[in-house]
Image (cartoon, rainbow, N blue to C red):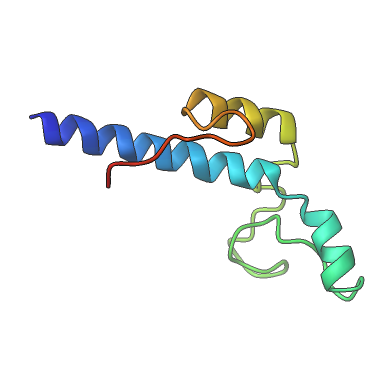
Length: 87
């Protein structure tokens, strides 16, 4: 029972962390710097524009403040967090 609770908490933390990292990623800037304007940032999932199933704007927007809030909520706040996973 305790192992299940710990694993469920870990899964929730992973999802919060993924969302926080997505919010912290400035896709527009990355695209302009690394792709030198030759492409556009990924914001429609895995399916490219023009293909059936493409959902424009499905990506989370760049929002570093919300990312920090989520990481703090998950226990990863501060500049040098000492929190470590037990897995």
